[in-house]
Image (cartoon, rainbow, N blue to C red; front, side):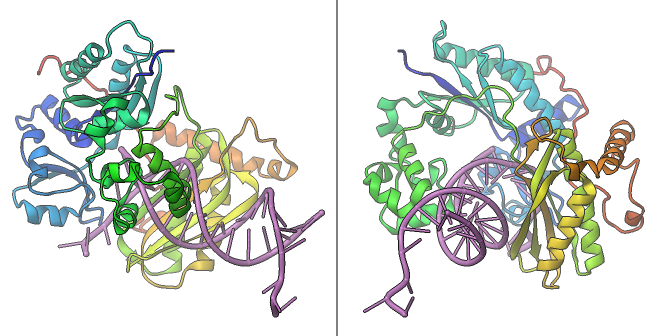
Length: 413
DNA sequence: TCTGGGGTCCTAGGACCC
DNA sequence: TCTGGGGTCCTAGGACCC
């Protein structure tokens, strides 16, 4: 049995690169990648965080997730451009098309990351990786890092080494030199909380964790502890999962531009979110059985309530009414900043037997489906509930829909 | 902190059952 | 009360990822 070879492909500063390429394609003479720049949310709408940064911006100490305000303090001449998700979905789709030429076994991990199984191929893996990297750069205009290893974990760790436009390997015999000296926070699945816990007991590098007794970590940090101990030792054997992985939940949330202080207004926000969750779950041909509402107040404190339904649903009104009840049960009356609804324990309609209870809701489902098709044809706001008129609240909140095309870049580079 | 939005998985405690 | 012992389901919260 020959050793497995897995590639992890990671787009360098994805949103920022894609934004830069789009602007070059549309006549801009500035390449955002070469100046201090970020893709950032709208500060006026209180969405002002850094979603992606250029390498020059990184040199000012700007990090993803920090507020745009503090990023501008670090670098006053910083250029901030708004995000355009449909654009990024298209760029991502184009990259996947390229990957498919190299292996039939590809797992899309996120909008800007994918695993590719390169086991048992005739071509030498480093040659293939180099061709792949160059093809993406020449044809699509952006660069990627490729990590190569015997499993997904090591491939992913390798793609994170030095950037941009680089290929790195991380096989079993390289773990000690290339991975063990790294700080513990660099290990996949060690976040800031776990970092602090590990440091408090003298574990500072990935090697420190790897050399700790397995049972000690397991009994201390339970399942997640065992997982990161195995990762530190390069142990991971999940397959590259080809094809669509069914969603287990759909959720949408929004940070309002202003604090919501009345129940009526809060209900409207919940209805607008319910519209999107209903639309998405119907589009997936699925129903969910658990509805959860979470709110974040002006002090940034969050709390949630959930309820399991007797019968799974994808009906906008059922989602809304449940969400409203949950909200009324938990809200303490303080000003609210963020609202979120989640529909989970999703089951496909094909597997979900229509019960007598559900058939009562046939009319409701017909109405939802009719509205969905009108919105699909004439736009999301072609049918809206009258309560949203002059309310200052969007009638549907959340979601991403793609429309433009992604041109080839070969003429420019 | 002038702090987004979409996901997955895990844990702890209480209810309830045998 | 010196207060069984599992197992499963449910809810709230938290950790992590991009």
